[in-house]
Length: 539
Image 1: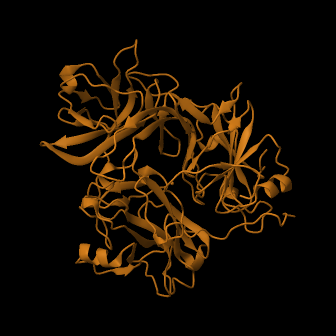
Image 2: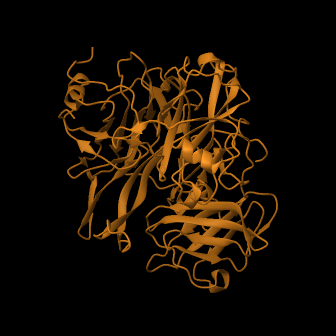
Image 3: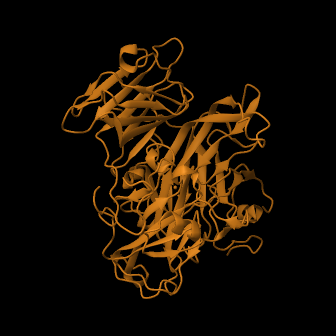
């Protein structure tokens, strides 16, 4: 039996994606003409309420022209119509919260919910569909909740159960055109928590309430980038072409978000199913020698046709590391990126660098009435020495972070060799001392609280360590920025994009089982790196 000394807080009104938090103590305390609905992974045997399977089909999270407008479009993409959305408790949860009223929803109909109905109507004067909103206030700010431009997860729920989660992010490999550059984010099919399931709309401002054409993917990708490291060569950029035809990238644009610079590629052809390496110090390729900084950052490759960007793009998020960073293919059709165990210049990438910390257990969808009624994660140290999760470099300090649950570790958090830390959501659990007692969590296992919430459908969770930082000069035109800022850069230690669609692991989705790590030689993107078992809180 569970002790009455600790409490489970009810459903979270808003999913706190902005801001990082950590607390470790024992006190109370993520093509064409009509992509929406195609290849959605809808299960015809679904037993969701009303027989309806509701999907988010379009998102405007960072509108053009610095507009404050945000909106989400939904549609029944499988099953039957709903006679009463309120009866089946259709609502949004996670990044924003909204409960739909007692109205019907047809299978052929798109509906839109927004943060600002008046601004929406002014922006989309020809919109003829049904509009809902505003969504609920953020309990922390007492103002209308906002989708984080950094990335968010939105859950669609029926009768309190997770129907599907929509994720988005401003970082690669998510399309940059949807990040304040004019487009909306359009669902094109697949797992909606993965970037490969989304594309930027061709139409500026998107097309709420109707089907969308979207920017088709290109066959050339940024496959691996070696940053400049003193005593070695000046770095290089490797392109890979998955298509059946050679691709001439002459005139294409290569961009570094870190340097805030872009270069036009002067010459180069990527062979079909082959690689092209562009040396960073070859001025005949980029027009000048370029510096690929080991502090990492986002890099983009933009297709150019007839002198204009076509919208086709490839991207790679470099880890802050002296190692090369690249992309590896995952068996479920998605990709993973990070620092490479070894560089593979002009050849297929092999394995991502991992450790010393690993995500060891994920209990993301507790079973109602189960023996463990709260979600949790665990991180284990596989190194031979202790790892301090609060790093000091050149006089400045920063904690390791766990992306996906919005957590940053505070001073004093140290994981001994072979040790672990238990992570709990502060919106679901208050009394950590009682949990330690009830679940016999050893005294050397620290318990830390995070402000986010694990998605019931799957999302990317990454453990990252501070690598280096820059002092950033504040904007002198903004009087609120009167002190210097610090921009930190991170290296991956481990990451996963867990999913409730992983074959053979259905019992982790609300049936009382957790995901537990079995393979520590690779990052946790592959389902084969996990097993299903009874949750082991803090063990």
